[in-house]
Image (tube, rainbow, N blue to C red; front, side, top):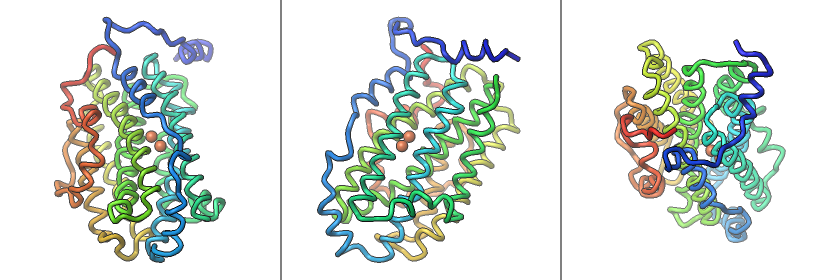
Length: 324
Ligand SMILES: [Fe+2]
Ligand SMILES: [Fe+2]
């Protein structure tokens, strides 16, 4: 067990700006990718979205939008908290730390984006930001995610398996599953030529989240390759159970968020998309898929699978980079 002083020294290790073997690591490359994606929410006008929201969007669509915003407003902060209170502290690799600092900024930018959407549509900011307290389905997802942060924040030293569990909870599940199912609806409005400004903001956020997901998946593959003993049968079963629990929570959320079908989708369509995405995250980590269902929204693939980034979360577990 290291002392607090040793741990603080480790946590405050300075970032070297030297490349390893003359090559940037994936953490550094993704940091650069994130910087190249810089954007600001007010670059997109939401004036037309406001008119459409008032005149063309059905009550059920408004109901879903409210839930989607309520979840994202909470979720962005949960991710930022995980980086600030758990992940950064327990990360030793300097390039990973560099990436996490950039990611934390982007999560703040996303929170500001959702605030901009709320204000532009004339929605009640306090009501939406408080939905994690008032809506049990959102509270349940929040509680599920917070366990990964809370279990590490007071630890002075953690095992590679604990680190992997945190990455799995936040990158495979929070960003990889919950965010992508939110994008399904957000981008569906744009596909129907509605709320195109908001859909554009979602595209920007999606691009950032894809980089975050790429980082997490690559980090997990790196941990497995360097420490194959992590993946015991028991731990694999635990990860599979966590993914199943996450899908159940998402299904419960869909029950209240979309009690009737919207935008040509219904709860079953939504659930099948979640199951498809869950399996994709599992197989990208060389773990057994759980549901084995087809993608019900193939149109979304062209929007979510960004060619320059897909290799970071879809490549086989043996193609991880070795420099880090
Ligand atoms: Fe985000
Ligand atoms: Fe993110």
